[in-house]
Structures are given as structure tokens and as C-alpha cells.
Image (tube, rainbow, N blue to C red; front, side):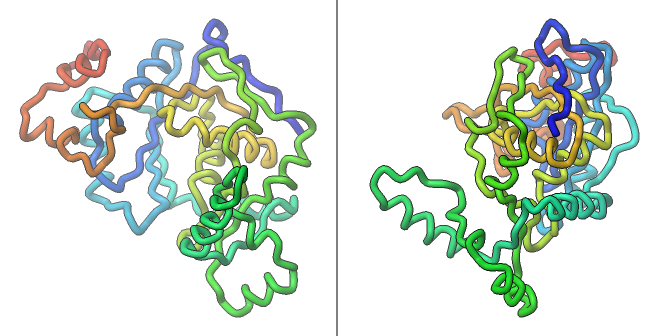
Length: 298
């Protein structure tokens, strides 16, 4: 089943398609700007180009005004991207097809647990001596098919999880990848569990959407913060199961505040919009503050 792996070592990277994929759930901040600049610069230096993708599957948090601000802030920074810009909210059918494929492989199961139940189960596991605590205790993995169907027929809300052990059994060898730092990584060494593939409220998840979109858009260089490095293991497993091409991965440093905390969208003091409109900072100032040479067009 294994798809041939690309050569992602720094000396062999060729013209690449990178992407910047923000969620319109708040205003972009300096951390987003840094990630977009890394993606844009890396692709340009390799003779490739960057795409812009709007990751708006979480309809409970995403807002049109934040999406508009993404375009305005990126244009102000002098960043460019190739069209078209896709929105994940327009692609739910594609994610549904991918989920159906995983179901046919027998690597999914419904999970009826609430967040409170999950936390209670994990608290019990943490109290056991020498017990390594997973992200999910596997409660619903143990349900029989009849009990699962009865819960579904009763209309009990449920998410869909990956049955990790079954999925790994379909892998012909230890799943690994080499990132652009030249280091090799093993999926088994990343903190993977029975991850959620479809949330109760939106019918899909970040994990499904991102691997489907990267393959569909021809993204061969995934640029993102090192806080998402641990997600690469589950993404590589999904790529193998769905027979999707393997991209190269570049995980960059995170921009932090004076107390070394990762910037978040609630940190309005470092929002690009505030820098533009209130602090009167220039785009070139932002580029230089983040360690880059501004584009010649600024």
C-alpha cells in the first residue's frame, strides 16, 4: 500500500507548491504572518508558488468578516498566491467520500462519548501507577456492532474515530517520513491515538480535510508551525489508507510573546489589523521584524 516517498532532503527539494491555510475564526497575528512568509519565500526560492486555502469547516467559530480580513492583511503584507482560493466549507462532500473509503477499509468506529465522559475515563487512567495516558481511553472501540447500531438508531450524537490498531495493521512496514530538516520520523513515535475523523457537529475534521485538500491541490510542500508536527503521523497514516501522495513537511519555529507563550488569536495586541490601523507599522517593518527581507513590490 505504501506510496513512493519524495526526497525531502534540503539538497533535493525542487519547485514546490506550498500553501498558507488559515482559519477565519479571528484576526491574523504575527505568528500567522511568519508562517505565510515562510511558505511564500520557500516556494519562491524553489521556483514554485504558494496557494491560499480557507479552512472554515468549523462553522461555529468562523466568520465572514475574519475571512475578508485575511485577504486584506495578506495583500497589505505584499503576499501573493495562485488562484483559485478554496474554502473547506465547499468541499464537505469530498471529505465525506474519504470517510466512506476509510469505513470500507474497516478502520473507523462511532464514538458516543461526551467530553466529560472522556475526561473522567482519562482521570481514572492517570491515577493508575506506571500507566501511559492516551488521548482517548477507547471506550466506544469496545462496543459490539449491535450496541453501536442501537445507539445510532436512538439518535445519540456521535463522532467517528480512527481504529488505530486496525489501520496500522494495514501498513506493510513501519511508516516513516523525512522532513526538510533532513531528519527521519516514525509514525509510531508520534502521540497518535484513535483520533477523531469526523466531529459530531460538522461531519469531518481537520485531519481528513487537510490530507484530502493537500492532495487535491497538488501541495507537495506542507509548511506549518512546529506545534502541528505531532499531527504528521496521523496525516501520513491517512495518506497511506486513502492512497494519497506524500508531501514534504517543513515545520517552522513559533513566534512567541515576551513570556515565551505561543501567540493566539485572542492576543489582539499583535494582530496584523492593529499594527496596520492603530500602530501605523509599515509592511516592510513587519517583514524585517520577523527576520525576512521585504518583497521588492513593497
